[in-house]
Amino acid sequence: MKMIASTRLNRAQRAMNAAKKFGEASEEVFKQSEAQLPRGEGKELFLVVSSDKGLCGSIHSSLSKRTRKEVNSLKDEGKGDNATVVVLGEKSKGQLGRAIPLSISLSFNQVGKDIPTYADACVITDTILKEKLEFDRVNIIYNEFVSSISFDTTIMPVYGKRALLEAPKFGAYEQEEDVTNDLATFSLTNAIFATLVEGHASEINSKRNAMDNASKSAGDMISNLNLLYNRGRQAVITNELIDIITGASSL
Image (cartoon, rainbow, N blue to C red; front, side, top):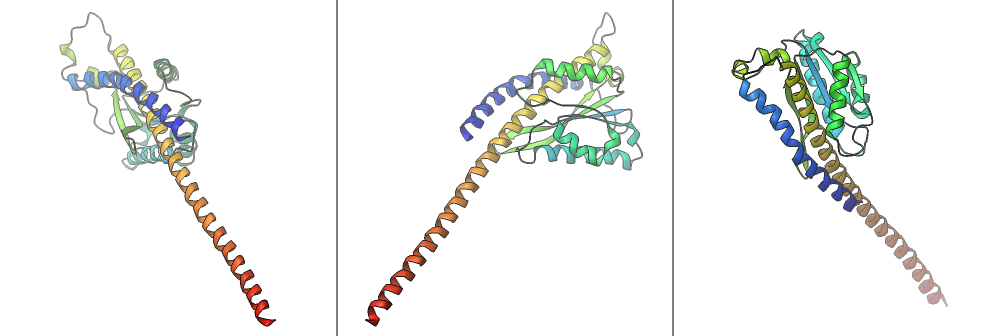
């Protein structure tokens, strides 16, 4: 099982390294234009990149915990109405559905069955736009792949049309027509694709570690049971020898 998980992890890591270029392209646009939106100003959409599968450690609970923290923080500031949550995957949906049910506006299932594709990201973006969810910034909450033994639940911000138009240096780009809306949509799709693939790699890695730990625990349990069995067997043999010796002595 560990060998199978390691093979899947290698595939997921190769896909992750390729998909990161898409996320870096989106970040570069916002960096060069100096786009920003102060916290609590405008509509914020939280996109939680989870999956439908379990047996992968604290992958899903970490995402849910971070999402609750961010949404409750806005509520404490009196800006809870500005927060909308979209969940990818049934695992985090179930957890967040008990904690912040009123904030969840949309959810997706059948996520994480295989390495995500750009088409998957396009479907998610199109659905969000068709549902007419208003947002000035999208906070993508996902599990960043750190190493073969760890991940970090972090946020990738993606700015909408308003933030781009108000960006100090966005006007420096010559445009024959207004492509701001298309650029914002394209940047969102790129970011969703990059975080989907990286989140998938983190999940596969966590599953491999969970399988490894389960195998070690099963091995330890078998060793302990063998030790108990041998001790009991030895005790029975010792008692039988004592009975034989005692009987022979009484003759």
